[in-house]
Length: 323
Length: 189
Figure 1 (tube, chains in turn cyan, red):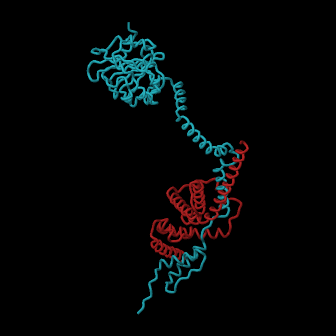
Figure 2 (cartoon, chains in turn blue, red):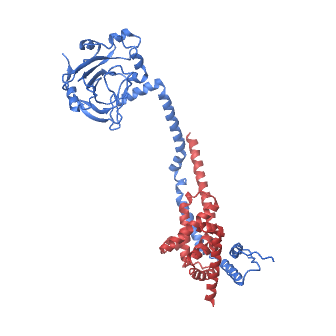
């Protein structure tokens, strides 16, 4: 005996309802109940009586919304000429700025332009620059970056290092040398050496021997591994960065000149490229007092981190021409 | 150079105006197409024509405010509109606010000289009766009938909007319609 498939009455009702809502005639199958048919008729009545807005409301709301739409986009209208103009210009202006920046960058990367740019920067910011916590001191020393330094270092005169007397050095230096009359207890002079003037031709030994020094370095020691005080005084030419990193920097006054006290400086100078003091100074951690007098730069540094600023200031204040 | 830039600005302004016109036309088209559906849906959810008008206006105001952020095709717009309409109806229930679109009310107030169309008055009478019985049904049943007869959505769409199974929508709809019919018949008797 064959059975008739059961009708999913809910699905059938939905199908009929969709037909009604689309304006078609609902075709219910024969097996549905009277109640089903009555409900379909009721649905037809509902569809016929679908609420609709009053025309006056419908038109009024439309007018209101269209007015508001115009207000929202008013800046796009021709009266807003300035904004429209800017909207036209900003993309090409941005593109042109980027191109110009790129070209300037390329230009300044070339050696002649770079030298010129460094000269301009040097003229603007001066020899020594301190700018707060994220700061560094900048000193003039161009050959260090250009590679001349190491090349010249290979050419250091054969009689070097040797014991120099102050008089010998003063003959080679064209400014009066100053030395401290005060040293902390236990410290004594360990070495006195000249700093080569590296901008002279490296292969001209005669020139280097005759007048090839731009300053001196004096090292004082108390005999302990970290007990070193180093005094550099030199006439500067060129640029060298004096990186400070996270070290603390304070502005102080030395011999009535503005100075900086750099506490815990970690210098990144290459030992092989640093002819003076390379064997005696721990460059990794030191305190440094920097100041200038005229075109002479003074650097009083110590690897003895226990030595207070007051002591370093006392050393600096005691400096004078030796008899 | 100046002349060249001047032309560019002019072109830009013209294209802005053109875009503005297109935008207005597009919005007008969407309004014409959906305003009746929105109103019908809302009318099934509130007790009076005045409330339905307020709510319809609020819904389209919301659409207008957010239309710039909407970037899609029309079917998605419809789904977006249903969501806005439904949320607005829910908000209405929560707050039961007084009529606040005064400017709109002034423009479209029934107290104006314009006579109400007879067709609308008759329909409104019947709708008021339907609504009186409809609101005795469960909230979910009311919602399904409003979406079905107001928006004319298929069961699948209703299921998506209400996050229900399509078969559940079908059975709930059928049951709700029987209940509503019986209630109205009993009232007439």
